[in-house]
Length: 163
Ligand SMILES: *[C@@H]1O[C@H](CO)[C@@H](O)[C@H](O)[C@H]1NC(C)=O
Picture (cartoon, rainbow, N blue to C red):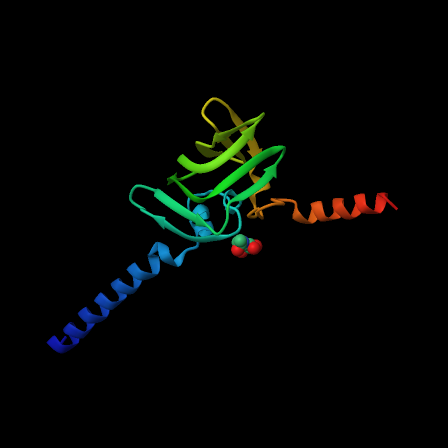
């Protein structure tokens, strides 16, 4: 092999390595795709994520939403602030801040979400609740949450019942 050929193949290699690094950068993924990378469902984040930061070495993340988001899941009211922080690892979100759940009359900070097979366990420290993973297959919409279409049908039905 001539030295010119060797040099150009070195240059090509370098270019490929750079391309590989850039195509693996987190900026290419959406926040929802990052959840999936860690084996978590996209429904843990509501619609309306504008951007996020992730330190992939520690798992520390910050997610920004376009509005404060409130919705109900299986009787629990959840509130997402416009800035959510925590630590992501495979099957878990820990040290969360910015997500609250209403229990009785109190808004408590959601501290952890962990996945155990087909279940998601939401923990507020003193208490926890399990939900089927399948509930979180899609991102909830702020306001109507997971059953926007269902709510619409219920609204129409209740309007009809006035007639
Ligand atoms: C935030 O984003 C969601 C989803 O893209 C959209 O439906 C909603 O209208 C937005 N809210 C505001 C206040 O812009």
